[in-house]
Amino acid sequence: MKKNCIKWIAGLMVVVSQTVTAAPITDTVIVGSQEWAQVDLFTNVSWNTINTQCPGGVCSLASTINGYDLDGWTWASVEAVQGLFNTYTGQATSGPASYSQRGSAWAPAFLADFRATSSDLQDEEVVGLSATRRLSVVDESAYAPKLLDVYADRLPDYTSTFNWAEVSESGPRGGWFVRDVPPAMVPVPATLTLFGLGLASMLVTRRLRGAKV
Image (cartoon, rainbow, N blue to C red; front, side, top):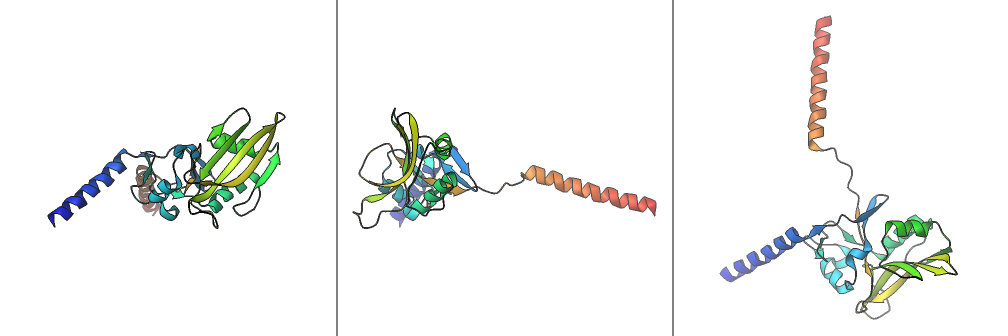
């Protein structure tokens, strides 16, 4: 009994220490009603590592990756990332799908919001693992949604594609994490101020009515 109690306390201390040391994710991009973490914050993290912290895409309490606190975040599915891409491209395709356009306006906008996970003189790309595993392939594979910007003859050929990457593969790829933007809340001090002003207004109104009578 005593040993079990000690183990429980030790486990609790580990969870607390991870929660305290983990940094909140503030490097984000807000698109509509969703907030996306920069993909490169999770560069070179394997699918299995992410799945341990966020099984099925749901990040558990005190889950951390690369020192970042993932509590309240969701490891995005391939469909969710497709929806993000569709917001920029104006398409309405379901994932995994691809769409390319030469000299587009949406790809520069995407690359202005999301940092590239790799770039050179020939291309830039934003690629990250999703929570969706690829069916009919070996177990260690998952969809890695990718936006690729390839320069051909000095003209941009922007391509939004979905690809898959083996978990064991190393490379400059991150992970797609999203959460709903919390509704704007009036700070408590402001709420109390408004309440006080309303109460004062009611008292003044009553006194004025009494004076008229």
